[in-house]
Length: 310
Image (tube, rainbow, N blue to C red; front, top):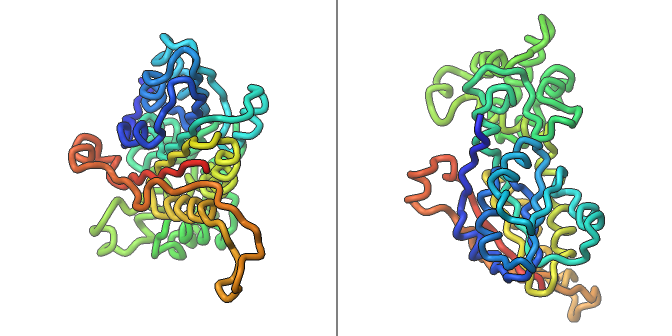
């Protein structure tokens, strides 16, 4: 299957990065290479793009799409490792970094990856298939309290307790091995009236398990801080999120990095000596236009936030 991922907020990202033609840019979530392709169009031969992805299928697809460009370096890793990535390439500073935190259409639509609650497949959900933790491990080996916490916190699912209990009860009879087995258990746990309203009944639980499998939230703060530390003055970081948990983390981290003094308000003068590292470019998150949502419904929940290094 062709690696397909429609680049969300494409023009807004490129504008937000404020690209210098001889700059060094990191696409921390290369995907199918859509954003990277537009970055490369704005770079001269003296510029450099570093494309990072933990999915080898994505790296292969992007390499084919960007084969006409010689000023690209491909790295199989996670943006969490940005310090090590740049150290290995002997690069001290960069001029911009982009992170698109969405799951690609390819990953959702390719049955054997196990991301989709619409297709039957082995429970997997690993973006990096070399990692040991899969959805199967979470569903079959985590205790009931852990499963409940994950579904409650990462899925914001109000029936999390019932779903966790139903999962544990069912796996005692036999291991839960496929996506549609899990979907049926989730459906059974959610009252009929609630199943008929709102999104697919398994959507929030699948999101929660995927976040746990790929450590999507726990790696964000460090990745943002390390990335900002590597930016040249005037360099920018742009991050696209797709749900409220991610957006909240990005918003608060950007606010923290843009705050100079952290002294208590009752202090008459600053004693912490803190200095702001960035200024926030997007006071309010940028969202897709009505036209983009109509063309690509999966972009509906996307939000873009941008900061610039001081």
